[in-house]
Image (cartoon, rainbow, N blue to C red; front, top):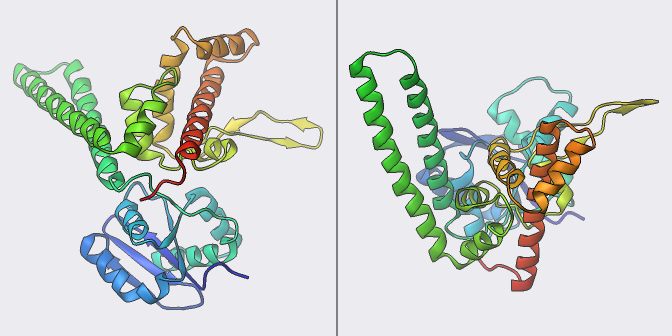
Length: 318
């Protein structure tokens, strides 16, 4: 027996999203903004009440819709893009349109509803936190680009312009960082989680903020799922008598660079993390392999500690 009566697949784009209903050939398109989301919820409220929405992780473009649905207490699953693509390929349909993807997501929800987990935001401030942290990272990338231009042979006017832009952006990054820290400090749930994350070697203010923003599932899944979600679970590559080399693949793109920074810091700390890294090197592992193992260890510990915190505090009420 199915847990839900309706299954709503939503294919998210930068400017629009397409909605498909299981067992319904028709699809409908909406603007991916506050007005479009309100219109979608008005049109489908009778289905949402006892339905399940399925949407993919799409570079953050899904966050406003995702959090709005959660705020209204509707069931929503944030699907792993890699798994959804594999599911669609298994249907044997090589064609790709937004409408087909929306209907495929609805079918995915219908067939997997007994095994998939619902998305549960940590706080009502999640959207604001996500946008602020994303904006900070965008500005950091521009600063890096300007610094690279400054290294190349340039005339005085260009060098002055680059220096001015770097100084201006650095000031803006500091302002946004202050806003992020203030937002977390005012939210008891986020504040407590950040304090727990910072007890782990390698995780400081910036890494903790980014993990809270980009990995809201942290503490809500088991260690295998969190390793898979971050792309740090080694995949077997065996066939018959051949034992292939294990590799880590896929995962949420924005998380690996964050954990790499944390692993580099932990490797240089005077803690058990450094001992773990050095033991792997002594066993003949490559430095990058040892770093990836350290990244996985950090995220698994972070997940366990936040899970324990959540259990100690009881269910988080949004």
